Image 1 (spheres, rainbow, N blue to C red):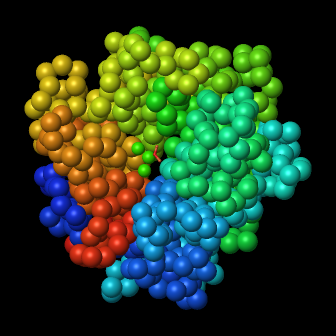
Image 2 (cartoon, rainbow, N blue to C red; image 1 turned 30 degrees about the horizontal axis):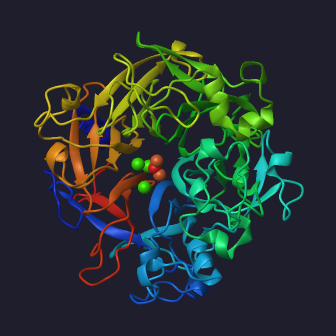
Length: 569
Ligand code: FEO
Ligand code: CA
Ligand code: CA
Ligand code: CA
């Protein structure tokens, strides 16, 4: 088959050069086209985007949201569905009628709340390419107001109760949805990352509770929500921040199904959720906490998955672990139990970072996506960079963050990032022990001759910094997306715009496949059911992407295909 042919050749494309312009580049023999752009209607009752006024509040939950991130594809009744995150908003784009994108009213706040969250949409391919199936009965917007159930140890706990939800069982909304994941039973996992930035206090005398500092919850929210929506005013609702920072499960086949926040997977700045089934059927979920000097986690279910069997406790009843990496290329998963942490199960679920500090987990260089190799028992995590690695730094819990030679975090003031890989003992992702190595250490050998030159598989032809999104295709090729410095100057010279590369796990060879528009990061990757299309996300592009000069910049999902319509992964 073509899959095997491509696997044998490993790289089914001719690598491309860096770019610094405002569009996308792909190899010779490939083409790209937009699938869905910020503000595009999911339903025909939504107003069209205005260059002067953006999307009005009335239509703001009826259109494709802003800043796409993690995504997964599903087939529902033979139809192709994409579930995709809308991580955050650029207020200058969403509120173009307000000077500097200032947030001035409750309607402005509502517009922003609706533009974030998740889109579930049917897409279809026609002679004009891939596009949204407007008014599909599978189309759904999940926003910062959508009701969600709570599962796991924190459900109903006092720390989860608010005036509006005295039982601590129903939360409105999901926020800062970054990476994603997919379960074998056909649900979408969306991961809440920088939730802290949405909260503030209107009372200057408000004393923040214990637990705010570790998560960076401050006095002023980035979008001034607290001035217009009391739910985000911590002086009025001090427990509301405890209700964010989770992995949320969504059923893309049922637009009426209530999403579920799974507190058993811990509360931190979740990047993605990489699911794999252990040999005995237990569900393993790898989870990164994207913050300087925070940790890498793993969840193992108590019950086992059987195809077609019950799934309702698989993400709510299990054991959470944090990773400890030793300098002899081995490591172990440290269980976050009440005995080991001195915390009860609900406290571990809500203040997970504190629990991981208590057991002595390894401070990492910002764990972004984890990807599990489908053809070998190993997993990879992108450690994107860490400006606060060094002798003078700790994380917010006081854990030291100095670089350690022979560790997965070997460089102080790490500008470039690296990808760590581990192989579990006995080929069992549920095992406690593992061995590890660095798959790649990004760097710039044209500028540096120390560790910042990068590892041997970095060369002038594949320079990049700040690996972030990562996905394996079905042939076992690792696709690496970057979210870094695209200045193309000094230490970043020769790296160009953010990009997507492909890596061969066996040889370490890495080649550049795609470059994004200037200002953007490339994040989110999924394949059509027939694997003839790659869906790739472009987040926070600069204008004029993709509509041309004078038009608002629009974060988009694009489709990439081979011109001969052969398989692409
Ligand atoms: Fe939203 Fe860590 O990237
Ligand atoms: Ca990311
Ligand atoms: Ca990033
Ligand atoms: Ca981002």
